[in-house]
Image (tube, one colour):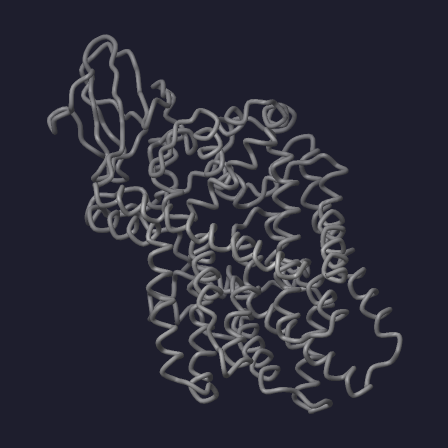
Length: 565
């Protein structure tokens, strides 16, 4: 117990050290995905703040456009982040707190993975510390890539996978696999898909090693059924939306070899130190320097294969072109966190074996400390470079790709430093158009540009969040159609001047924004979203299911403590 507490302090200290360059500069980092996620979490923060919960459409974020994002993209995690923002009331402190949280949890989960796979304590702390400083984790700090939220729980997924081989008598623990898989799906669906593929590899191997194959399949089917129940809020929302709407797909990367592979030019994605360690682990395995277990070989080989697939060695351009479904990956470097966790686990298991056979010199602790310090220095350098942009004289936005802004420099800094969380996002935004309802067979050449013009830059109307929806007002001198900057899904309802709108009063553009026929004088439109009755029932059941799970976990924990003490 004392060792675990000490390890926790080590991970907390490392988390603070990683965030220190940003903290001491008091800088906000506006990275590649910052503005997208800022809008997601602003929406949930404002819902919490005003007690105006709208699970589906955005009534505060994304220019109050009524578009659906969070319901398809980790809704519960979005509310969790909104709660953090609600508590700290600052974009700067939100980044600091969430950065510490992501790095710390990644260390704890990697430590857990190592310990249950019987890695010696010192090596468990070592590889967990290294994992905290990998690109998959620190990219949240430097770029706000949500990939990191999936990466921080990858070790939990691998703990389920390795158990399939490690424990032939009890290869599946129902509560473990259900909770871990559900947590992945609720956090980051793409990471969950990668994890399921890894599950499949270990499951196939387990068919030849477990003692009771029938029990294995029985537990598998039970876990699948309960996981579907716990994640029904994700699946049913997708099914309902795609059934009745034509949604615009996220960005499709047609040239992944040019824009989606691990970049060695600056060492941000894979440091030289980590690459050397991975090569050493591969060499120890290939040349059989020590006796390695079957599980050590599997995790290392699988990790190397995944790592190589993130290098520009695979014909990803052709794969994306001929198998369109693989395009969901977008950027193959997203596979990197899985390979890093697997190879680091293999390294920890190998080091444990070397120690048992007395192959390692007595100064191995010093060597591990030096490696960690070199890695930390590299990460701090990256965070420092990302944070220093904030204090530039002209451009304070770290990544301006596809970003539109009407203020920059000191004026934009003042907006982000104010207590009004909404205000700065009115002056800088990224016009991502994912999941807007487009017309069937519509060809949209430049969706970002069209979204920008019809929603972000549409300042001719006044929007206000009301209970469960959005109110739009404007004054017109004619009866022409007016774009109100709100999108309409099949279940979106339009109320014009206190009456249910009929189809003669409005139409939608190619990207689903509503065009209202004005009347001379004041106009008022109320937009609400009315999900089907089965969706309401399903969401209620889903929330009840999670409360039951939390209750069971709490009861088991209290029971375990009582038994121990």
